[in-house]
Length: 262
Image (cartoon, rainbow, N blue to C red):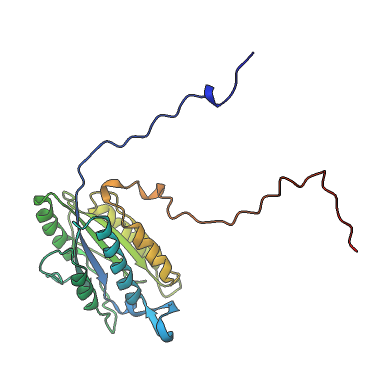
């Protein structure tokens, strides 16, 4: 008698991840302070108060910091803002793993009242390279998370091709495309910047929907450690949840009798 069944199928090879050292992160958040950061989101806050992009960004950053420290209290954070360029000094002298320090730093970031017109990332890359060297000397890794909000101003930089010392992620919040803006060209420039400087796989997410939950979801995806990432094209999280149709009752079938209406 021929045998057939699952037992005859070759076993799938076991998945294994080679052991490696876990490196804590120093993460620098760079928040766009252009007037477009003051654009309102589609949802309102308490008592109907409108929520701006910057309000949403601040909430998402604090969500990230709390979640990242819950994963490991060894991660550290610092902050800066982007106007025409980035200031030569960080908002904090040292990177810190204190929630209170993060809250105080985030509170100080304000949106401008008019457009800066230019967004130069050169100083950001220079600062990140300097800080990354200090992090590496302490057996840590360095990451930049840029949150960008300009729909017509393409970021630029004068950074030479050199040794890559840090990973860069981007969240891009923009207006819907129109004859007055060019978010696709801005997005392409951000992709080029990430590819130019990022040591490990850098993620870039965009949203023109004006929905806070999208920003929170994207920020939570950035919790992934740069040494434990797949390429973004293979990223399949978060997965959409679809409602399954109810299955017919196994007890009902041809033997069941239809009851005539009265």
